[in-house]
Amino acid sequence: MTVNGLGGRPGNPEYRPEFRAASTGLRRRRSPLWKRGFTGVRKGTEGEARRRGKDCPQDSGTTCRDISPKCDLRHMRFVDCTRQYLSRAEKPVGFAGREKQFMSDLATLAEAVAVDPLVGHPPDYHVFHKFIARCKNLPAITTAVVWPMSDVALRGAIEAAAAGLIEPTLIGPEEGLKALAAKIGEDIGAYPIVPAETEAHAAEAAVVMCRSGNAQALMKGSLHTDELLKPAMQRDTGLRTARRISHVFIMDTPAYARTLLITDAAINITPELEDKIHIVQNAIDLAHALGIPEPKVALLSAVETVNPKIQSTLDAAALCKMADRGQITGGILDGPLAFDTAVSVKAAQIKKLVSPVTGQADILVVPDLESGNMLAKQLEYLGGAQLAGIVLGARVPTILTSRADSAETRLVSCAVAVLLHYAAHPNVKV
Image (cartoon, rainbow, N blue to C red):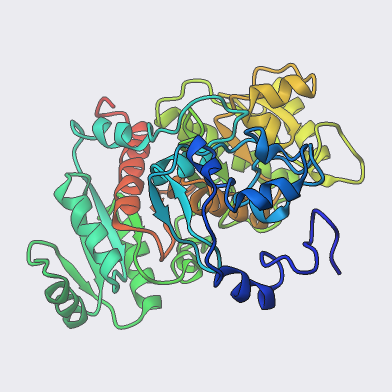
């Protein structure tokens, strides 16, 4: 089924593949209109421009089907063309299944798509390098690196050691580790190796090292998260404390001027209110370690009002009152808040919300693991964010990254673990 303006219409090659080949194969004479700018949306012949109608915004320098119903859908090349205006054409850029687009620089398009106009500042990575810089005067922490049997996992541990962040002990099959190091051109002769034939044995050995004080942090290699955390979460032989274990994504988001923490997106699947108390407090303590003295905590939901049918709004209201009563300390809580009002002052103003948290949240507490994981990955893959991961609430910080993460991401995660360790053990000034 097609809806005019949404799902496409018959004969439109953008939505009907059988028409695309015929339309893109035609040679067309470029109109002189394309030289005036807005080139990604101003394509075609002068005859086509006349046929579109006088009120087509393409002929007046804008592009918006909402304003002009006669504007052809084929000219809306990029998301939300009502706001995306591209610069004068100089270079052709091809997209699969489409005609070539023209623009002066790919960065222009990347910036236009990545930056929410409600945020109101240019994109910039401004967080992660500060964490690494703060670690330069701190001693490296001993770290059990569990099963680093992929190129990126082993290289991440080696680069963190070279940066002076960790003193790694590699846990895995010795011959396999040496063969992998030779393959990627790295020398691991300076690092101790604890032999382990399986991922489960490697995780158990790492937990023993942490319990005995031989390791100050735990680092995930290329094994699955469940395999790593299973021995760590054992009540008698693991690394559990009175706190519930939770995970935090630390985000360096180009469209947001603050350090952004998202929790819990990796461990607690459907946390209850009692679990969220620990999740929030763990994140606040991490924010303190990262240099945020009084973090602003946004308790996310779909709406900004308490609705008895939406459990996350009830939990948010209870958590805010618990913070008022001193049951959660060290931060400013507000909720329920939708995502837009948590990170955008303008969105909060439009919705007439007044709060010290709206538009400037440092911590986003999500309702459950699914929503949190999707939010973090969307910011990473569609918003251009960089992210690091850490597990809190255990005896030692656990550097927990995705198996698809880069060595650079693992480096920043190590820096976060260093700052967290010395915040909990302030014998060395951070």
